[in-house]
Length: 407
Image (tube, rainbow, N blue to C red; front, side, top):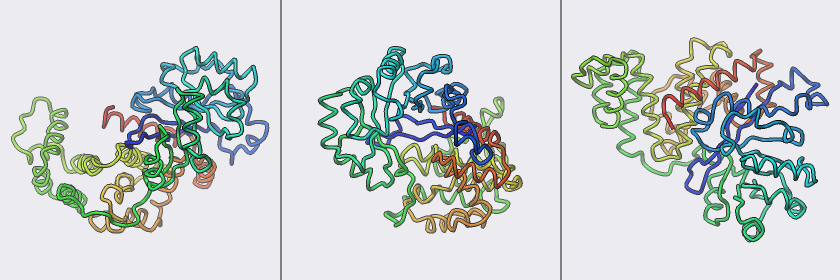
């Protein structure tokens, strides 16, 4: 099993829901799956397995999850496969579900059971013939490139006033900003929120300079705990966070100073905590999804280390994941951002030049995030990696993030 989450944003860059996409088989190892065998077990919604096993709290922070259903699985006993409240699940249909009586009746049944409904891949020419299904839908996903939103807004406003319009394939921040400015869409999906910075826009704020100083202290070889503690002392938020984590570890200990707290945590754990805590603070003025993205990337990369035969470099891979959006955090190009922090050659080569063994893992993670299952499957075969190992590493990263930053 492979599974990933793709966020849907509103016009304030706040994540409102996630789409869950899963793949049960590796096509490269099961070529007959591309033929008739792909319909074996078609009544099972694999994405619901993921949702039910993880729960919406861990998977999406309690937000709605969009789950794709096809012309076969829509007739399955979905209520038996789903153990989470139906109002948290949006069944995502496509144009394989036809505007015929048997489908229309089933869609209405699911609506009555409390599930929310969405439809995608519907051409404009089909809107009228799908009217009975559209009446039941809470969302429609539209390719913003292929549709005139001003006309669509009027049409849906009159015909289906309760349906929410979602722009998909929004691949640049410029596109997102323009769509928000024009209005009409309620949600947006695409890679726009994590596109690399091509040109520096602003100077780094003094507060972020302090955070960068702290990163450089703890990522230096055999760093000094007292130096780290002194830099932590410059930021009240970090001081409070440090004291909270130390108090959880040693309930009966009396913390006398920041240096004392740092010493109690220890060099290795302090470094790990600082890298994650500072990354969160660097993202404070960015969409919350950036924090989630890099944290999960970091833990996912660490979890994949042994499968890519890089077990000894797991801590470095963790740092690579954390810093994989450093350009976005600092509003600098990646080269300028990496010049400001101290990272290993392996991390720098991967993030800046897409070279080395670390780059291979970063490429894999990014393709996994996009649900590019063909490329993911190809790499799994080349590297002789089991799908279940990857799935477990990803779920482990989700659980770690849930515990690190509760919803």
